[in-house]
Length: 394
Image (cartoon, rainbow, N blue to C red):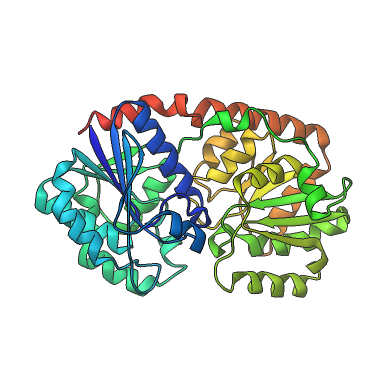
C-alpha cells in the first residue's frame, strides 16, 4: 500500500516527546512490511540547525519507500496553522490508499480529515492522549470545547478507526466526546535492539557530577504539568527524611515557564538542593540516564501510554507509575512495576518511593520483571500481528 502519515511535528523533533518516537517506529515497521510511507509535517519542534537540514516544500527522499515533506506553519505552535499543508493535501491525498492522522487539535489534522473526506480516502486517527477530559483541562479547555463541537467530533467519528494505545485511553476518549467510535487498540512499538547493548553504569553520573552513592530518582521525557513532576517534588520532602542522600533528576525539555514553577515548589518544600535539571538529552545520553538511575517515577495526571516507562523497563530500571498511566493496569497485573494511586497530600507517592528504595531485592526483581514484560508486550515483533490486523481493514 501507499500510506501517508500526517502530523504537526515529526522526527527529529524529539522535544515533542514520546509520540515522535512511536510514529517513527510505526513508519519503520510499515516500511519493513513492504509499504510505501510518506510523511507530511511541519517544522514544529525542530532546532534551527535541524530546520536547515529539513528544507520546506521539498520532497526529502529518505529511502526508496519513504519520503518526507515539511510545510511552513504560522502563529501559535499549538495549532500550527499551515495553509500550504491543506493545499498539498487537496492535490495529492488521492494518491494514497490510506492516511494516518496523528493528533487532534492542530490545523494539519483538520486539513487532512477534510481532504480525506472530500477525496474519499480512508483515514485512521491516532489521538496520542490528547482527547480526554484530563488532558484537555490542562490547556485551553474552552477553546477545545468549541473545536470539539464544531468539527473534532465529526472528524473522529468519520475515521475508519480511531487508534488507541491502551483500553484506558479508549475509555477516556469515549467519555469525553460522548457516543461510540470505530476503535482499534494498537500499543506503541519499541525496537528492543536499541536496548540490547546498554552503556556501562556510571557515565551519566560522571558527566553531571553525581556521586556513585547518591540515590537517583529519574523523570525522563517531556517535562510538562500532565507528568506530575511537581507531585514528585512534594513527595521528595518526605522521602528525604528517610533517604537523605537522594537526588531527583529531571531529564527532558520543559514546557515554557514550567521549570520556574517546579523550582518555586522545590524551594517551598525545602528540597531545591535535591533536584537537578539536565535539559533535553540526546538519545544516547538518555540511555545513560536510565542506566544510572535507581528508580524511574512517573506520577502522571494523564498519560495515554507511557513510552518512557517502557524504555526504562527495557533498561531494567524499576518503575513507579500512577494509575493514570495508560499501561499501569497491565504493568501492575504482571508485577512488572509499582503502581500508585495519587493523593492530594502526596503521602501515597512518598511512601511508595521509600518502600521500594529501602528494599534492594524488590528493586532488582522489579527491574528484571519489567524488562521481560516490555519485551513480551511492546517489542516490535510482539505488536506486529495487531498492526497487520489494522492494515487489513483498509
